[in-house]
Image (cartoon, rainbow, N blue to C red; front, side):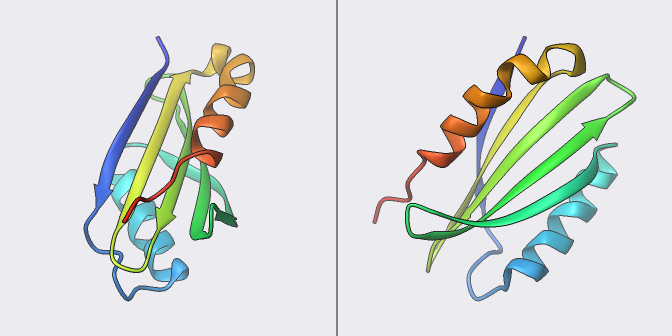
Length: 103
């Protein structure tokens, strides 16, 4: 079953997107998830990352949106079985690209 998780990014304040990317790549690697591609974006006025990942041990693919505001950041982690991912990727992308950080 596909899952979307919202997580608080507690170390984002004052960090560059490069530093956040490197930190998250390390965190995901410890979970067995290989980040294959990272795109920098702006989503609803916030700095953002779109990370594409794979967990071969569990046959899962990930689309991870990272939104970084001035004082806080959030992760929208979208995951499904690898075989179902292409059919769900548009829905995952829409969920990430419509997310907003409210003040």
